[in-house]
Image (tube, helix red, strand yellow):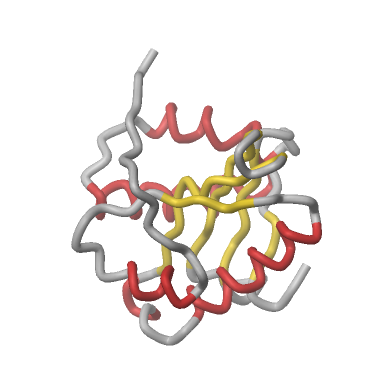
Length: 147
């Protein structure tokens, strides 16, 4: 795909799981490895509902970004939601996340995505990175119902 983003496939599951676990630990997300595995497998097998890309060199990625797809009348069609984005702590601050976002936005736009969203906690230091990438806060809060 590019030098910074590489689409993950089912063959990458064992390489991806520790990264997802690290992100979840950092964010205080308590889920089982089985739930992680079950959530990732369809995305890695080509589900139309989303995709996961590795960030960094193909042979030694330093992170990942997972995007889910939906539909928005307001946005005029298909939209995406960055469900998770994570880069190893030792390589943060080197511009890889910024570069990955730029490439992701380009690829998704070329694929027909009309808007890309992400969730951000108040005070998250990455907000400035997202703002530079063109993300803007909107005047409402994300609410969730869990089945």
